[in-house]
Image (cartoon, rainbow, N blue to C red; front, side, top):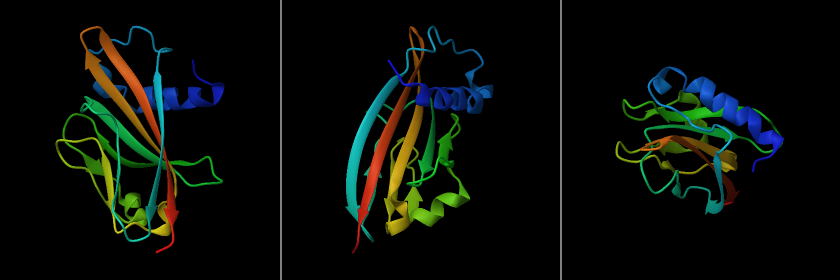
Length: 142
C-alpha cells in the first residue's frame, strides 16, 4: 500500500507522537492512508494547504525543500492548540487557526516552493487512524 520510502515518515510520526498516543490504540500501523495534492500560488499571495476535512486529534506539518531530504517541522498540535515553529517564518507569514489543521501561508515567498507533509492522527471508534497529506507547492514569480 505504501512505498519503502514512506516507512521513515511513519516511524517519524510515531516517534514524534509517542507521548500523546498513550491510551490510543493503532490496530494496524501498516494501514496508513496517503493523500497527494498539488497547489500553485504566486509570490506575495496567500495559500491554504489542507490537512483533511475533519480536525485530527493530533497533527504535525513538515516541509521539504526541492533537492533535499531534510523534513523541517513547521507546526504541530498535540491537542493543546496549534503551535508554529520559528523556521516556518522563512516561507512567508504562516498561521494555523485554532479550529483547523490547515496551514495558511500569507505573503508567500519564493522559497516556500516544495513538499509539505501533514501527518494527522484521528481518534476513531475503531482505534487511531493515521493519514499523511502530501502537498507539492509550486510558487510562481510575482
